[in-house]
Length: 528
Image (cartoon, rainbow, N blue to C red; front, side, top):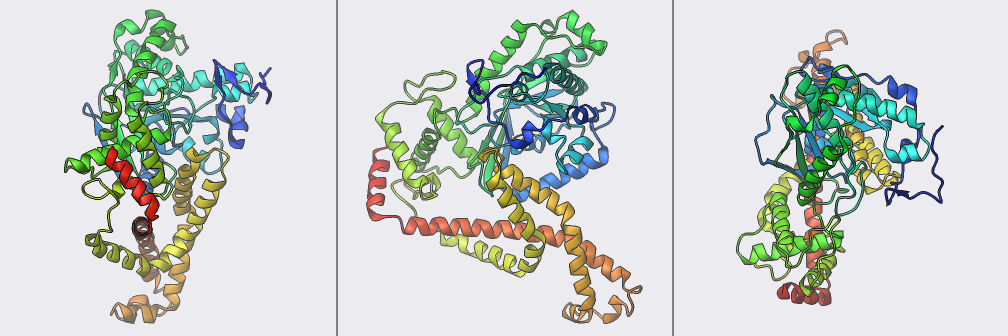
């Protein structure tokens, strides 16, 4: 029988409140989940070669529009060959978290995901082609989504499939927190990723393959719920496994297709090692207000030293150094609030800026007040705006429905801000596949009707279009195929124009900043 948690009992498992489940997460079809295809390990990808490469090619195109800047770093070189890699990060931005890792690590990945990502319309079709393995979380089990036997069978099957992939040299992403959340620090670590990588080590040991390693990954978004935000992905120093961590009983069990739980002491040892380093690669502050305060101080100090923070990556690392070296800061998990007049003053100043959509980047060169608009950016802004206006009819027809759908779904989801950009991403991804072919056909039909005028504009003879529909097939095919790169370019031009709009809006807000608040802000910054 399924174990059901009532609304009154909602909260507590191991001393923590269970995460709120979306309507989609509550719908569980065990028969369909068990029918999900298993990965294969003999090829270069665990799923369909064709659809995997198509999916990731499209993901890169959409990500280049969704994010204004992207950067990544690695403490040690990331390689395609060799031992498998389990990547673990904190989880605050839905699908954007694993996607950032997938697109910045050279390996192909075996993927485990929340069960409903395998059964949803459209998305489920893709995830099955990519051999995504469904996982039932503790919250879904305790709320009666399925029986303990069903969850145990499904999760055991999925974790063994993921372990096999890691053992054979693929990458994998699992989040030790077990759920996406909106806190400014990590929450209690679960053991699923550790047990999975240990099972992978046992399989590797049984097949004389190199033992996998575990990579802590920092995922940083300037404002995770914003379109065209900045992202920075950092791959930390790997946690290396050794033979002593994998008992012979476990090797024999997984080699025969079974599942043997790794020793609890070893699981906890590796979990504790991960918990000791991974929070360092996150904001790791008591509140988001404290996080914004540290970033503001980092900007002020950098400007006064004549070395302004030019990138999001620079800003993250500077704020981290400030946080780690703060006098009297504790190393508790989760972190306690930083104390002192300086952090209180910085928090007040940062909140004064944040309420107007501003931050440390809006300070002047010496870090004493707000800066003026940079006229040197005007030529590029003019070019981007002009390009968007020229391509506006294409952008409106090819992107209008996607933008509307992404906005509606992102703003109405019951999964919180951490799912907002995920829905916008999915609207762009699937919209390109489902909407663009029809829009391209519409533009092709319009080009046929107006072919004489169109060819006259580009100074080509009308014979190129043919006199009959049959004669016009090459012309129509060229127009139809040519629509797709133009649609993508119109999307890029929309993103650039959006940047111009955001930058212009911030310049206006700096200029119209309330005089009394400006004086107060300058006084607080001066005392930092």
